[in-house]
Length: 61
Image 1 (cartoon, rainbow, N blue to C red):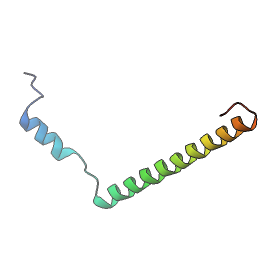
Image 2: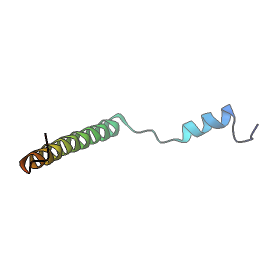
Image 3: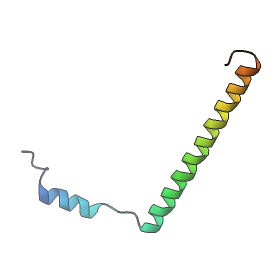
Image 4: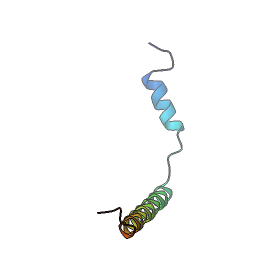
């Protein structure tokens, strides 16, 4: 067994981790959700535009 891999070493490392505060965690979560929604809308709009263009030139169904 490796020397650095032990229950006491793991618990010691967990105590050294700087865990985010609830306010920071909420803000980061909101940022990620807004970012994901923006890009989802962006890609859906791009797909509609490409589909419209392809139908306009007679390639799309």
